[in-house]
Image 1 (cartoon, chains in turn yellow, red):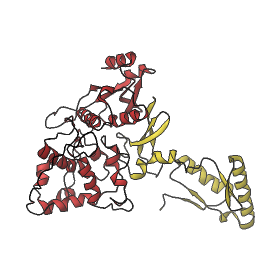
Image 2 (cartoon, rainbow over the protein chains, first blue to last red):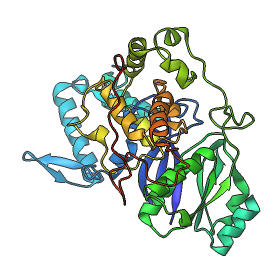
Image 3 (cartoon, chains in turn brown, cyan):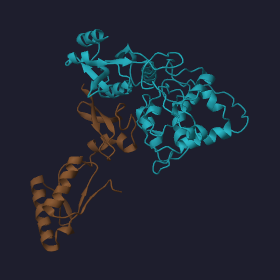
Image 4 (cartoon, each protein chain N blue to C red):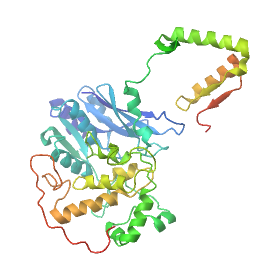
Length: 135
Length: 273
């Protein structure tokens, strides 16, 4: 029997509540608020309490899908990224870089958000960057 | 204490020992095992309380024969008793090491996350219920004022289900609070006061007054007082002391035997709160 409580940070919004994942036999079975965490002080909202559910969900996407003839087909990352890059190039060539916008998320880290806006400004060439926390 | 735990693990008296260990200065529940016995040296008695017995029930659900050692305060011990009564754990599979307890009128010099009562604002004192009041003082508000004050507290609820999720004695696979026919599960506000009262009714003869629910409540609803009230009824009517009695509570309809004896309904005097 292996049982661990793994400290982590809730990924649902930008608040950054401390959580503990209850891991039994390498499966996350529950989420607990971290009592000593300065942000949430042992409290969580309903989303935080159910963090473990999306990890184990059967609906979770584990690989990229490409829409081909109206249907989603499984593919690998190399192909998906190549395809996205090709389509972006096409769109930029036809309609200009401002035809593309980048939406980033509170579910990823600050650093990843930074990289995403860098990609938008330096690679795609647009200032159309927005974030889900800017409600 | 550490030597005792080590010898238990070495001799196989217990398969795992649940205690606390500091990880990045946060005391978190830690499962000590024979394979990593040197970790026992880092065992701490955390002032932050977690429901170790709930983790124990999750482990017992995976492996019913597992023997579990546990650091236990008074509240943990009461919770364990309730879990034995409800067949979630077997007394012979659990060994406990006593730890210092929460401050209370009986034990003033004690430590836990209930160390300092939080400050209660003037508005809450005026229109709501001060979490640190005694039950008698809340009852003294009378039916009408009491109702208004409780409704003020209930309407703050953001329905995080934290009170249920953290509760050491909540283990039902299907919960009434998740059941659309009983309590509306969708929108905010939740159905008040029914959401809280359904839970309160289920806490009669079950709540061990550990206060974890109130600790976890983001809106500081005085849940502990609410469940103290229903437990007071169980004590007054049936002399059932939750957490120390070894029998099923009088309200159980599941289990070996129904012990609830029918009694004539007392005439109600005045409006009910």
